[in-house]
Length: 361
Ligand SMILES: *Cc1c(COP(=O)(O)O)cnc(C)c1O
Image (cartoon, rainbow, N blue to C red; front, side):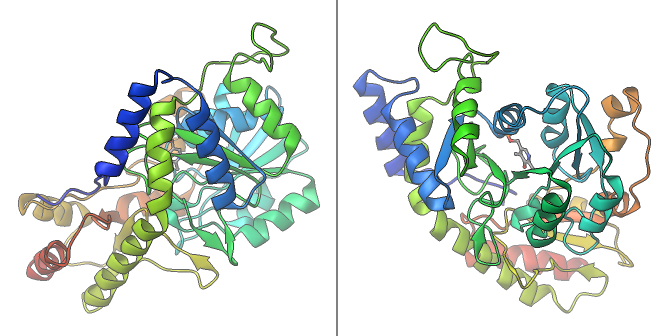
């Protein structure tokens, strides 16, 4: 069986956890501080604030920027549900802007069309490990005085114009086991703004700087030292893990080039695409996306559909009144299929995936 995703946990991670367990400090402590410093350094921001999930990172980032009731936040409907749910958590309203066909990322021209006097922020998602068009998005934000919160939950180490995803606006990351690096569950906020960093630290821990003095409403969204110890080891491996993903992706694309009706992943020249997912599009194909997925599944090859239903079409979003039309996202949802690309694959695995696809076509 070749799984669609697999965390690479080695002796180093196991030893790091054991050490924390023996130390007696297992909740937020020095390991979290060290992980934050190392992550900020890696992304190139002055601060990083660790939390217990990517969803929490998005939620805290929005609250730190004072976004709430009456505000509109523009984002993509072609993402994981947490992107727009985090907006709803704050009382603000998600406003969707459709994606670009080739990159699956939010289309800057559609962002402009959705700006109203209530718009306060934009949340681009760097889907599948490729940064959204951050040049255009930062220009739009500048022109309209908008906050940018990057959903970089799939883009640890990705770059746009040589600059890391998560360092353009306020960055948010997830360390769920399927991501490019993991802490079990976990998340991180990255920022160059000292005030946002301080507010984020307070919001993650009951609104307090000093224990038992609460200056604002906060939550308990802290990361444990156990998770941070795993994160410190994984961060050191991240560049190698990403290189392996990029190599696997290049190999797959080279060998799939000859199959008609498959659209290969498009890599924007300005981007370092870290291939959180390797996503094909099946259109005009002799087999449908779902037939291909079923055939690969029968042969023991895991695939994934990210995402089969755009957010505006989700039952909960229908219930709260969303019914717009986002044709590029809807088409993508019916055509995309992701193949295994994770660093745990060897050449035999990749050839098995390729052989099975060639067999089918
Ligand atoms: C994984 C993910 C999240 C949420 O992260 P969790 O750690 O699972 O809460 C948010 N947005 C995107 C695009 C993701 O892929």
